[in-house]
Image (cartoon, rainbow, N blue to C red; front, side):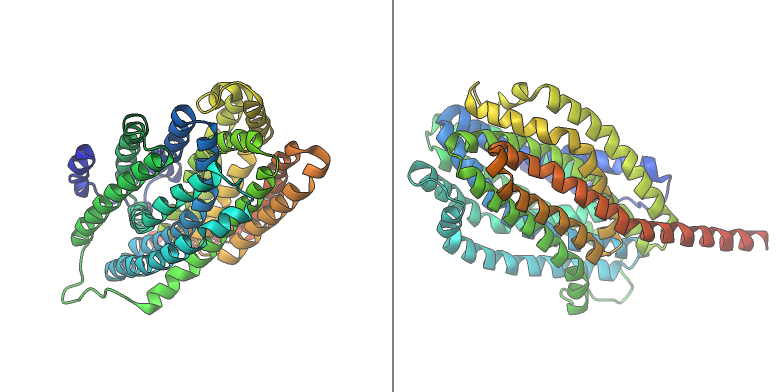
Length: 472
């Protein structure tokens, strides 16, 4: 924790970055690369918990942590939605150079987020047992330790919110390096704290939960300190006073945040429903899926960083009214995601056992995990196309189209997860992922195409006007 505090204190010196200038491809690449690293370290929190639980406590402990993870995604989804809403609005104001509204947006989001966190804590502590039973968590050790993990996790929800909103603000201001540094340090410390609490102090599942709680708490507080320093450096309008809460700005934030929350939340609810089907197959399938989904989500979230980067890029350029750059950024995003998605697909498909051995010994559970990874890995490039397109739709505030594509994917995937097992057993559940992705990607691309064509046309018209002015 000393290293977190020491290095966090110096991060306020890093500057924001204007994403409205420079060639789109290198700009997006330099911006997204730290985000890519950040999400890998973010996922180390959950991977560390599962690794330590599986290796040093037992297979049932791994099942408990993995089972709890599906419920924690609801809390993460709501905070991520608020993160996206704040990020899009702040980035738009940053691109338009409306700095007073930018500051108000930040304060409004923090106040709203703390209020939402309080409600989530009350609901979470009250409803956790019901949710665990709803997903058919086996009674006994798995149920009790899933509940224990969740109770500790829920107390850290305000920290989760503070960190996620802060990360969204950094990203909106074009700074992807600060988030990377915080996550690299905190996730590394978390691994050692997991091992210390479990192996040395013999705290069991509660040890991995407390380690995550402490590390996320320190990261959240340090992030907030750095945000406050950055806000003091943002130019102010002479004579203007900072407004700490604005309902009109909150309305703008929620126009983006609520669809994002709903999207993330319904994906989480869908995952919980799928988890209930998986749980009905017993502890072996649960453990295999639990290990595989950790790996899968780590890779998926890493690929999603390009979507987040495109969102900030699009929002800043929308604020600056540089429409052609949005279109060019969309194309550049496809190229970058393919450069990562295709190699990842090949590696996961060829070496699933090597990857799963991090969590599981050879046996039936590993067989189930391998089946899942080999079915979904070939389609990572497909879902990456959807996420790149979704990033532009979010950044340009076309949230209705974004929601249509997302729900089409989700509804189909969850429905098939319930139907296909009757014919194909647990393999049928795994098949629902790529089938849903293909349909969702096709819909997302079709809905975005008209918008992108319009941005390109408007950009060409702006260039013609500028050319005429230069000639005169």
